[in-house]
Length: 127
Image (cartoon, rainbow, N blue to C red; front, top):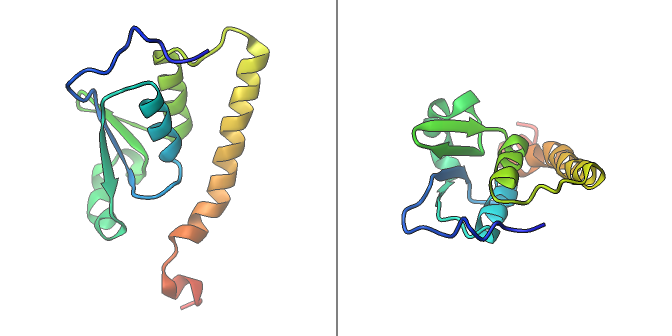
């Protein structure tokens, strides 16, 4: 298992990852793309800019992978897409199951922690 070396980094970015400038649901996508040596635009959205950008994002959420004018949302399907594209998917069903368990556990944990990390000062104080 590992990166398919036949898909080498090109000079032109193949797409854009839109996500906040923090370690969250988008970080695992960044890590995979960098490990696979994929040239992409890493659009890191500031929290202050999110309200204006949100209506332009599929489902009003991030991370978003944008390629050839098409937006793909939801971090786990994006990871599976790149896993298949860049040779990170194993043919062994048992190992593939374990990989999916890791992805889903991470997503479940982030779903509980992310709201706490993203709340404002007034939210934390109950205002």
